[in-house]
Amino acid sequence: LAIWASGTALSQSIPGRTLLWADEFAQADGTKPDSGKWGYDIGGSGWGNNELQYYTDRTDNARIESGNLVIEARAENFGGRNHTSARLLTKDKHSWTYGRIEARIKVARGQGIWPAFWMLGSNIGSAGWPFCGEIDIMENIGREPSILHGTVHGPGYSGEFGISGDYVLNGAALADDFHVYAIEWEENRIRWFIDGQQYFSLTPDNLPGGSAWVFNQPQFLILNVAVGGNWPGYPDGTTTFPQRMTVDYVRVYSPIQGNPTNTVVTVDPAEPWLGYMHVSNLPANGGAYQFGQSWETANLNAMFNGPVLTLSPNTIGDPASYWYAGGGAPGSPGNKIMAASMYVERSGSLAGKTVVFSGNVLTNTLTSAHSTVAFIKDFAPDYSSSSTITAPLVNGSFNLSLATNAGAGRHVQYGFETVGVNVWATDASPFGSIRITADPYATWIAGFDTSDFTAPDLSPAGDPDGDGLTNGLEFALDGDPTVGTASAKVRAKTETVAGETAMLLTLPVLNGATFSGATTKSATVGNVVYTIEGSNNLTHYNQSVTEVSPARSENLPAPNSGWTYRSFRLDGAIGGGNPRGPSGFLRARVAVAP
Image 1 (cartoon, one colour):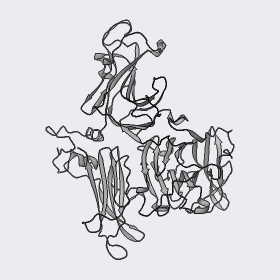
Image 2 (cartoon, helix red, strand yellow):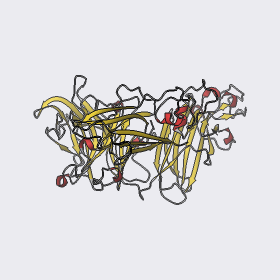
Image 3 (cartoon, rainbow, N blue to C red):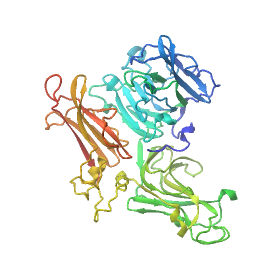
Image 4 (cartoon, rainbow, N blue to C red):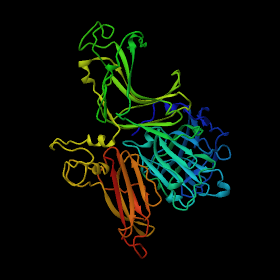
């Protein structure tokens, strides 16, 4: 799980963007939301989805509490319905074309509960739905507590055929905490984010053939909690009421000036890595920065071993009392806090671009005496000011991005900072270390015990278990290179769709993959390329394939951390008659960079 920069969710400033509109919900407790910003949809018509609730404008269902907007779904008789809730919208008050639209939300939970943060085209009154276009920034349904859906609906791809990307929150439900849900919307492109991590992207090329892209015109915002409906199903004995969706803020930012493209940087040993040491007194001694004393960046314990960067606590071998209490030697406590940075600096070439810094933490055994963060910093030409984004490093992947400011002479740095008390060089080992690489394959292979093999070839092309499947292929399918059997995590089956038999293929895919394509579906994530193809004759793979959600992973073993099951359906002709005969074929082609 990639981690968004600490503090960013609480700041209204995003470099390169202008805040156009926001609601921080700062009114008095118990009052209605700002009527200059929000109106209400009211009624119990089912809202086109056979929903159960009656939407009201009462404070029972939408009110301010402690600087948050609370939308509360209740079980009560009202307006001929057995449930109430609220649906707030900015229609006829505020609408936007393009920009970053985000909200920090703690969603409601439970079977049949359907919280959403979404948009509709302002021309819905004249064009109707789905011709107005719908952008779903965040949807979650109670039976899938960990799955976030980002979707668009338009002419030819609406309802159950909406085009969607999903994100799975490992080990937790979305309702357990606040998350920042956002889109970045440009002409002919929309990208979806959770907590700063992009998980889905869409352009007109991803639409079904002949379909219109209807997302280059104004849209307004909607916040609501639905109860029941065709998609989430209906409340049952496990569902408790009331259910609350809590919204910390909603913000709309301008597009980045110049509409810069992402520039991806990573942990590349070929780059000119630099070191810098910042030394200060212990907090008990005032914590002030130390001037005029000598220290060496050679004491920065950071080194590459092939593609893997290892960071260890910063060490000192000087017994002077300046460094160690009372003068000292091994085992003596240090006097200073050392913040050591290992970084790459580029001057000019990254200014005005969105810099994305990503990598993988293989192991992190640092004790509580030290901490390490990844960072991106955007400095003014004279270094007098800067914008910074950071992310703490835990085992697994990290991904952070910063929209840098345009201008000649600016400096952009990316790298890592380790902070903690200085230690004697021979005392460093018990304090642990952190190992980082750009390659997710290296992360995966490090998780297996290959001690039973003699000089195993652990490269992507190797096959130490002799099962005929390369390590790279097993990696791409979340297999095990130490067991001489094919992966049990791939399954083909059929299911009935609209009275016809459809072929399905389910396989594990690296997290972060976004599949696209009008016929064949493909995605690139890390160093793996997945291609899902359909055929009705095993000669030409030209039949339409659709990703289905949720994945049909019943009775399959749980995927390892970093993988998620994905399912694909063959939609093209697969035999004659009605219903269609099961004579179609699906295949997954996986390519791994050496």
